[in-house]
Image (cartoon, rainbow, N blue to C red; front, side, top):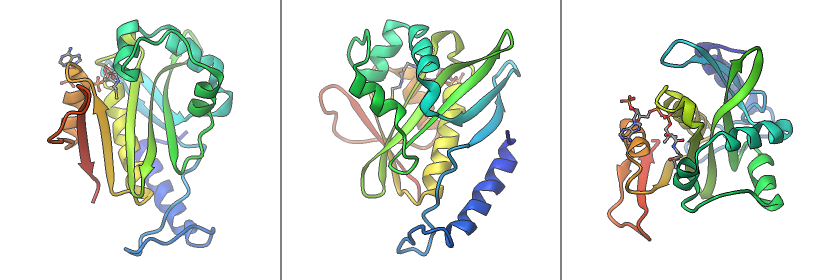
Length: 205
Ligand SMILES: CC(C)(COP(=O)(O)OP(=O)(O)OC[C@H]1O[C@@H](n2cnc3c(N)ncnc32)[C@H](O)[C@@H]1OP(=O)(O)O)[C@@H](O)C(=O)NCCC(=O)NCCS
């Protein structure tokens, strides 16, 4: 497990190694870097409890379902824009089969009574060349503890490292917590609102 500074230098090392590891060069000369699937950084909640921010693993299915089970109907509606009681097999496969290039997913994991427990997750999915959409959900009992902000910071850094130029987010207009979080990172609202959804954009370069 790495602290945030170590993680940054590790990304830089990976970036340098990337030029010899079959990675593609971008027109700007930047290196499209392989994101380590073992990404793991220790951060802290607002109450100082340590939280591990790590790459989602294929074997996280049970833990992920447990986290969803501890998330309120309203939070799930804000994440998926519709009442969500369960997930189909194809949906679960989409959420768990992460290639860490076009689809990057991080989870926040905390120690609860000596057991690691997932308390939130964030991901970006590349939707078109150089542009990816971000989305998050944090278990209600752990909201407003800084988890969403920490996940956003790591995803934005990974997206920048990967050479992406823009992050976008679709948010329900009443979702003040998410709007506040995104605006603090510099996301700007788009002019149009499609289907009552706010569209926000962050330029990474
Ligand atoms: C949006 C979400 C991911 C934010 O995660 P989080 O861990 O609670 O975020 P943070 O603690 O880093 O920051 C949230 C901020 O919103 C504020 N906030 C929380 N609820 C709020 C509300 N109802 N109105 C206004 N601000 C609110 C928090 O106080 C905090 O601001 P602060 O840093 O000034 O105290 C989380 O609330 C969540 O999972 N919501 C349900 C799913 C969702 O909406 N996903 C987004 C869809 S893309």
